[in-house]
Length: 473
View 1 (cartoon, rainbow, N blue to C red):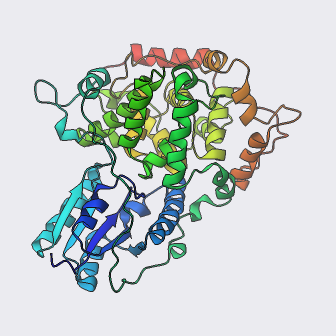
View 2 (cartoon, rainbow, N blue to C red):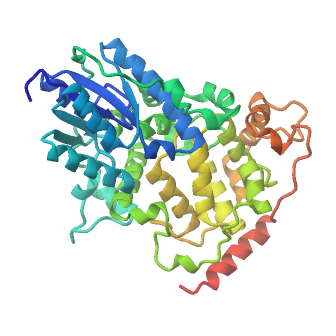
View 3 (cartoon, one colour):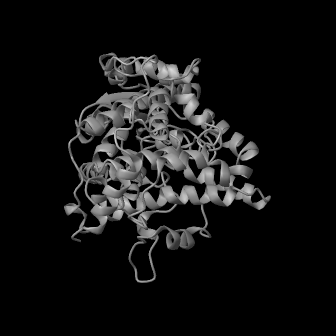
């Protein structure tokens, strides 16, 4: 590189300035750096909520870049064509980016790298979305881990690099390439009126993520072991939203967790395990990409799940009107906040795939469309784990009882009362907000009677257990 030719920094799910190896490496060359985000097919395919949240993240990140003398250039089209065109326009001699791990992204990135190298352009990808690269963690036999506990034992003492500092400034080119307007992309269009409801719950950008992490370590991590299971308590970090778009890195969270553990905070080890659970999901996606689309365990293709996405039971589940308060409260929390408590995710997934005997892909697609913290690996592994056909799903025949689970983890009914309006004289503001977020054509009102259960809990459990007992695999 000449030192005057710019480097294109291909921005993806890494909307931050702190702990950004590709950015730091680009600045270290002494060349001007041009950050660029490409709206390609992977962006077009995003569901309503994650696409809207991405738009908010891009707008915020563009402001952060301007604060350090840079810009975010926006272009749309196939990534290879866009980057090759920008190389021609700018005279760039290198393209740097943070590595991705989903199968379609890997295929795209490989093709982009090959095309750029063929043109004599340096193309480098950097680690950072994970703490441990999938090909670097192996069993004693040289394979990959398929069970979480041995995976945790294998990585828990590994050294994780310290996070990189934020650059003070980013060298700018003499002439900036033209950028498309983010507003013209209309990334939030599919959210419709739900955007105004969800927006107050969004914690946008890396400064908010850092604040979230600091607050959790200062005030919550000590009670995390128990509090993380209580949906009516604000006992989790909430960082999944920011991790999903790279507004904070797992190694920033890891080192904060290590510091908390070293000073004796009780829940720190459990927090570290949750970070490694995320890693486990990504490693499985890398080694067995079928986890995103097909049953991970062999033999489950013959299991008698219903795939009718428009059945009355599935519609009731989507609407949060199953007549089961824990399920309905969790689904309504999703509509209002764009997120769902982890205990709620387990309950709604178990209920859909076991009590209702509906295919896990129906739930996976719904979360894909409605979660602002949507993450391809975690979403897929979570649904397959709950359904019984995924990794670590032992015993696969466990059926959560959503009634007793609510009594155990929400004994004061704080969670159910917060999210369910029907039958209450003075519903909470959040319970009423659900009716502002949902499609008008549903014609639902807080004055409606609360629905009777679509499936009796005991009857649904027996249906699932009979299906397991009569399975032919």
